[in-house]
Image 1: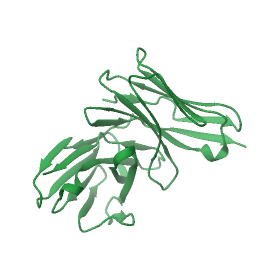
Image 2: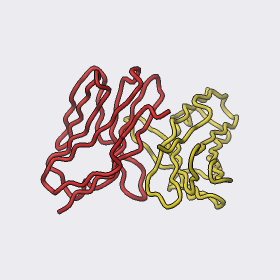
Image 3: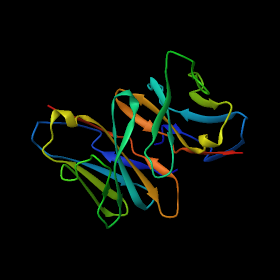
Image 4: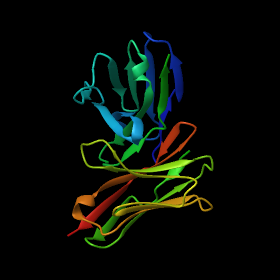
Length: 115
Length: 110
């Protein structure tokens, strides 16, 4: 089956710094990638949808200047949390969908802790 | 390395009958399991979960069964309704890591 990886799996950073999270589709080309944030009680919130080569579409309430998403190639999307604050501490998950496929494959997630 | 597998990409069930979605995992360290439901153009929504210390959890029409020895869990929906048509993902967590299966598309026919 299709594999999606995320790097790093865990990151601890100081308040005010920026953190970049990578999402890669390892064995297929992902025309669309999604970024989610996990909130308490296990709910997943879709943050943004990115299509290769175009600007990401952000969900309502998600600050595009704070959560920078780049989908520069068919196998890589990055999420940069800029000027991170402790309230940004969360579990961030990406997923990828291939060309002509309705199936969506999730990455293993990245645990961000802002101190 | 897919630690969580949903081997059936799709399932079709008649309205009123039982839907059974299956999920297998390989990592014995997983201690919490979740099912998510996803409609097109929406993010997954949490459906039901189960701790590894239990073998069954029921919530209305939804029941999750866990067989630790077989490293297998299943989601039962009874009776199935057309509105249940969606993609269902199982997920497992261990030490703050979460792994998802590839999903099973359930279609409930009227």
